[in-house]
Image (cartoon, rainbow, N blue to C red; front, side, top):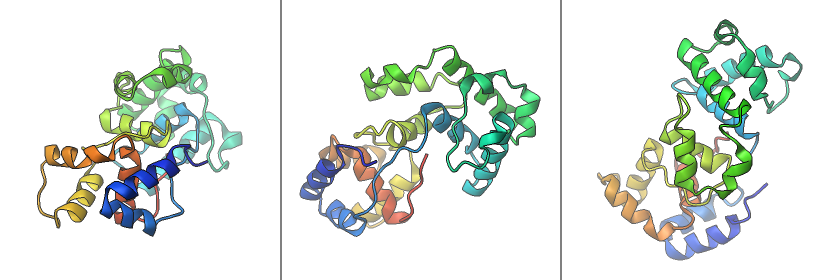
Length: 214
């Protein structure tokens, strides 16, 4: 389902930025969308770290089979934190996770299972407060937290400046691929507030028309 701010955002960005006007016109059918629950989205993010999309999908299927075989063939299966927390490290490793990722996964699962991370409270948190809560989990850094805010929480004004794809797109469209400092990129993005997530989305589309979903 399209975020409720999306149409307002594309109108505002189209008015304030000629580059974004062109990108928005080029990709009229695309928008952010949520496809799973919070724990599953973060678990998938851990699985996918530092491996290809194809490899991550294969490991995820093996992981879901280990957790809940009945749902292994569901398109976007959800997994229960309490079940994952109860698995042994050997089971997680046999599912294709490295030792380190198995540790990350169980830390995440335990925090959801015991209520340390409670999605029901997140709507009251500002973006930075939620990022701070997420990065306390082993294996979740700021970039992963920002992706989660954009793709799962559908926060409108996230600007993941450390993302190489975003940096590449900004340089391509605003500097002719010349160098721009991160400070210059931040300044360039100020007029996009409060819809920097949407601007980022269309800049990514200019490099890869097929959207990634989390």
